[in-house]
Image (cartoon, rainbow, N blue to C red; front, side):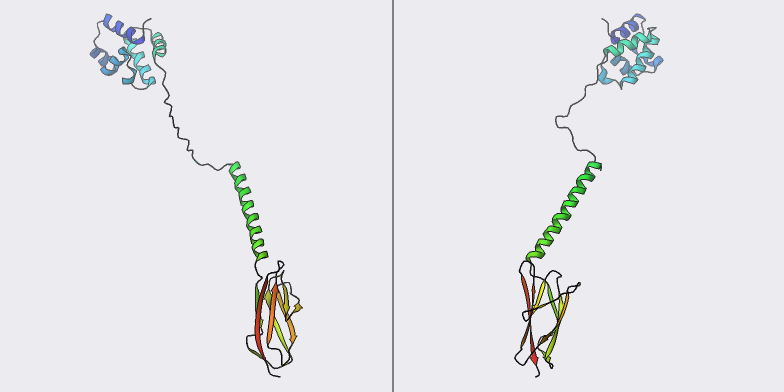
Length: 207
């Protein structure tokens, strides 16, 4: 069974055409003509270009170009796909609905766990307590002193062991009776977990 290279070369030789003549008439480089006859596909351009060369060459040699093309397609080796043993699996990042769902779940979990952690830290920590009155070493000239300040909404307040109400803003105010024997006002804020913050203010009575 003759191959495309043999068919073309035999026809050229029978017509006594030189490679230079083929090059001048078809405008196909001599090296390409030789490569086609030798079927050295590695020296030739891409298949569509080879196809055009063979058609022109066959027409000049008065060979049926359809037959030449059919034989070329039969003889032309298929391209071997190089297989990378370690293929590059990196892909261009693209945002997808799945990623949106995952991100949403993660964000919710972060918020929930963050809130729980905050609540737990608040639960186990001593409550905030601020006392605006009385001041340290304040002179009290009457038989009572006004004690006021602020704390956390869920804390309990006692002043000299007397419970005091807290308003919706966490503020408290109470008037405490004092005598000449009263030297300290002790304010305690007690959390739900039993943690206590204590502030003691020394006062001077003018009675």
